Structures are given as structure tokens and as C-alpha cells.
Length: 373
Image 1: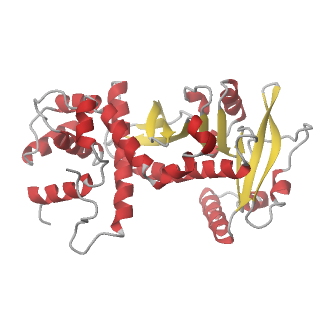
Image 2: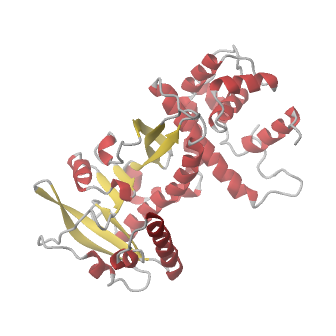
Image 3: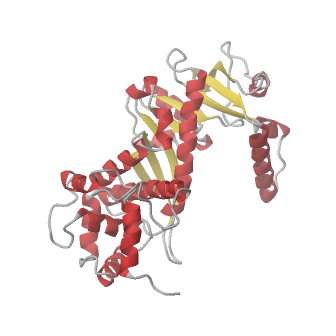
């Protein structure tokens, strides 16, 4: 296999740079990412170095060595780490611009959502390289529609997924999957005058009717006809209190339900467990628990909001695969935040590349989206 020439790297960079938001070079100076001329004097070189380190999983030392061989820049690994820390605001700006124009942002742009901060919360495992590497769990909160990482925490793999870990402001709307569906944690969010939209865990989150009787989830789901959505007022007990919420649900298409059931059956077979009939029946529906007020958010709006969370989940899946590459800087908050933000930018670039791939021309470049001058 022949090695790529420097000109090949330059051509590929032009294609990638064409996906970046307009004005990204000028913004590097406004955000303070370019302050001194020593080592790196222009935004293009800096971003290429950062993506070489973060997106490909090269260590800082490997990155600067490769950059010197390619004639890209001459600097130390410590110098590159400092550049990464100083680029956080710039990376946030680029990520926000790219996410705002993407299809993921559409469900988080209208109505009441424009006046509240929507945050998708998730966690993923990071594997340090090498035989003695340790597994860590990165807990993330990503603000929508900016796609800005506004919180992260690093724990060992025993660190549980919970809303309790995330600093919350009044009015926040937290979106989470089943791993975050814990009664005490949801009650903790409510005490901070914030709200949740979370995929309901059928077994571990019992619901009560408004008259404090057992709420039969499946019996209510069976009332859904066709593909229309339905919602019911419910309560749940946390500690010594009952808290009000809503169950919002819709029926999946037969194809989507079949896929969900087959996935459950594969997982059960792998774990040598017997599936309950109720679990298989529940796979025919999408149902979420929300504490959002009915007067402000209809059932359909709640489900659309969770749909935004589901779309972001696709981005998280790509991000998770990227997070497994390389070494997470753990010595300072600044380097870790910038590293994670660069991963988010990389994921969005990958997403744009995949979307553009269907329209690539036979001659290998797209004149409709030239690199911004």
C-alpha cells in the first residue's frame, strides 16, 4: 500500500473544510484560539492538528511528530495540549453552527422550546489504549440545538447514569434514555424546578393513577388505535411523596415493532434469559414519561421532543465509537472539555460527510460546496 502524498492530504482537507461553517477562520481569533504566532500561526493549521489528535486517536506526541514529517507544523506535545485547551470556545462555536443547520435541530426550535434550555444527557465508556488501560465512563450533557457540551464528568465504569450527576438550572428540560429513568432522580430534577422527558423503564418505574391506584401501562397502551399518539396523567412515588407526570405514547409500525422484538430476543438469548410476554408486547410502542405541563406541551410535542433525543442518540452512537479512539486528557477540566468538544465536532463532520456522500460527483469534489474563502 502506497503512502499518501502531502498533496493528497491537502485535497482531502479542502473537502473537509468545505463542510465547516462560514467564518470559522475569523472566529478562531475572536475566540482566542490564535493568540501567538509561535508554532501555529493560522486557524487552518491549528484545526488540522487538533483533528489529527482528537479524531484519529493519535497521542499528542504522535500528532506533533506526524505534523513535522508532513511539514504542517513544528511544535511540542505540551504546546499542542495548550492549543487544545485554548481552542475550547472556538470548537464550541463551530459545533453550534454545524448542529444548528443540521436535521437534528429541527425538533428543538419552535414554540415553548425556544424559551427553555433543552439538554440531552448520556454516558459512554472510554477505553484507554494499551494492555494496562483503564475503562472510564464519560457523562455528558449536550445543550440543544447548539450541540454544546455544557457538562461532563469522568468516573470509573461503576459510575451510574443518573440525572443527579448533572448541574441543573430552573427551566431546564432534560432528555434521557431508559438508563436515566429512576424515580428519585426524576424527583430530584423536579425539586430544582426543571423537567424531564425520559424513556420509561417498564419494570423499575411503577406508575400510579391520579387516585393513587396501580396504573396498568399495557392496558392503556392497548387503547391506542392506528398510529395516533395518546397521553395519560399519572403519578409516581419517590420517598414519601407522590409526584405528577404524564405518560405519552404511540404505536410503532409493524416493521419497527418486529425489529425491536427481534433485538430483544437476541439479547435474551445471549444472556440466556427468558423474555416476558409483557416485554415483547411493550416493544410494539414508544412510551415516555414527562413532567412537562400539558398546557404548554401537547402529547405530540413531547414525543417530537423525545424524537430529537432519539436523533441525537444516533449522533451519540457515532461519538461513542470516536471516543474509543485515543486517550482522554484527565489532568485538567479545560483539556478534557476541549477534547470532548472536538469529538462532538468530529461527529458532526462525519455526519455531514455521510450525508454529502450521496451527492459526490464522479470527479471527486463538489463545486456546490467549495471551501469557504
